[in-house]
Image (cartoon, rainbow, N blue to C red; front, side, top):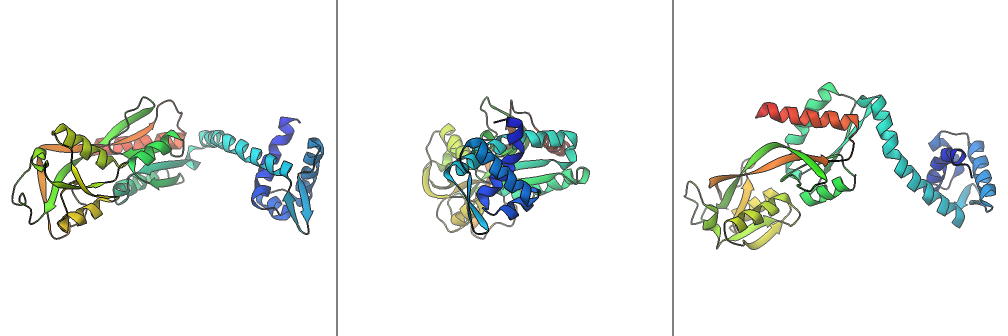
Length: 297
């Protein structure tokens, strides 16, 4: 079977697998219905077995047809990144950026970055994915996202990254805690406290574990959560202490926030795959992000 002759029919087969209705498939791919019907008949003849059977106005894929449709879907999935790259190379302003970032950055950091970029590139589209740090690292490796804004940046050889900004970490204790009246706290003073932390896979959990280990102790974990403000609320309820960034909004009653001595911060970096060519729109957004935070330093 001639590959060039087969190529235009891949979209038809993929659409047919999702909706076994020839007329609707023809409308979806922008072809006349007789053309689609003729192609399906010709494919069956070339294969030596029918790929559809008719049932009233609908059709059903045969086993051979289903196998061919699955192969068509895989072929198109492999082709789509190349088509996207070509399209964006011809017109970067029609590109798409898929950005992964931590939940806490969705309140102001990411919206401000996107807003500033769209001033100069109003037609670039965005896919925004929020998740835990390790999930975003995995998605970056799998090619599901173009860029990841996370803390700490990944340090594997397959990644490249640049630090955008640093965020101070503080100790959060209940207002009735023995340390609540202090002006600052050393991390080692918390060795016998019960900690409220984020779950494994979150960058702040990794940082908390690493800092405590460097201070000579393993934290006693009382509760694990998925969101920093939930952790702060559990501290306010008197259930433990936590290492957290400064809140973006007014903290709940019942907590006292104390600086660490010496000061400790976490670095937020923008990461991408080192040996993976980035489409023009993604490169443009990366440069915008780096320049924006360079000016803010």
